[in-house]
Image (cartoon, rainbow, N blue to C red):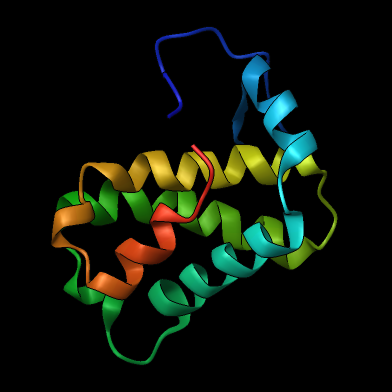
Length: 116
């Protein structure tokens, strides 16, 4: 899990903080799998027709939807490094963690597949 109290190395061009331990994680991550999971989460929450976004609590929307939107913009650019991908995935998961119990099972299951 990302420890927000520790020093980050930098904030990347997509707005996600990068930490030293993410460098090693980025070398071993299955990037296509992470992209697939993140894309599925974006589709379910932001582009889904089942009103998933409206069903989230105000707290979940405030904590989780902004990083997810940033991630969607990054994914749509198609031009990101493995470190940028890991940084986005870790941030999305971290921002969702305190709300997992209120999320539908399929969303929680997808989020649990992201690196931490």
